[in-house]
Image (tube, rainbow, N blue to C red):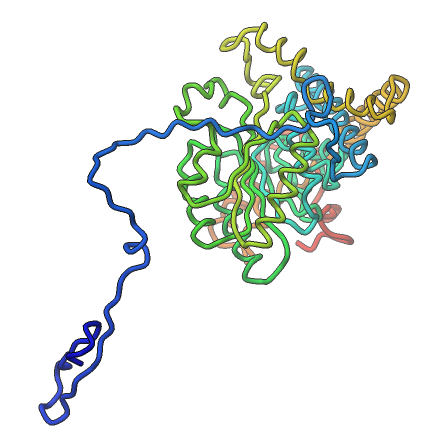
Length: 435
């Protein structure tokens, strides 16, 4: 071995001298250490980036590149636009219903219609979706209709969540969308894990996590991206950067260049897209999905948009932003207006068709709300179901305690609107309630 500098002799321990022999050991250099570049110049860096924002149509609804051919069909464009309008009509009527005391809570999607609908259109129904709470448009696109939304907001017997969630906290197994969870960012690590499971199963699909710019300040965001990057999970992280985390503007949330600039730090792909351009969002998500599946890697998507309404019906955004700011967005960068102008330019949309559509959606939404309000409520006993296969003793005790209380003070409670357990049919299943 003396002639080979990469070899050396080692005498194994705990061996008798008779069995001792020379063992060749090859020199090892860590690839990461070998690839590291060293310098004698001390340079403490603060990288200044300005990642460009992908756009196809401008604020006037005109193609940025006149010869550009969108990959989606005209029929798909029209369907996206109609769903954007359906979401807008639903928002106004549900908002008014909350103000009238008919439902207890609502969150509007004004300004973010294109980001939601176009991104959902670029996905496959077998993709697993995790939402935050301002993604009703994603549910609409994936088949969770206005009637189901109305039932959920009223928490009646047809509500898949059995009245145990806040309004607008939708969820649908058929639509492959997990139920909304109020705490910020908890859904993002779930998407990392689900994407890894899809990869292990060999399925050609992605898991998608929707969240806002405020949620990107949570620890779960960073943990989720690091997990997805190191595990090479086919996950899409879709950030709706709408300018505000409730009342906190993005200028007080971060100093860097938005959210997508964090992708290189995790070794991820990333793209920034004009969230008010429905064609650009569709193309960006479709290409990101293809990349994630083919290369088994996560992609961070930052959709630059604007929250045109209040954070929720519990918020008054005029306390922290001006009416001039809101009007400027509505006049100069409204995603609905931009999409309509583009379709009108193609000659496939006009004012008559617009008026007919608006009237149809308004009538349908009101009909759905009226149908939901007249329904009875699930049995109170359903409070204790669907968590454990075998109900544990402490829940049995709580159930017995509640039943005893309601029986003792029956005159103080109006229970006529609750169906009996024997009458109840679980809306998630066909036939009688399996419980």
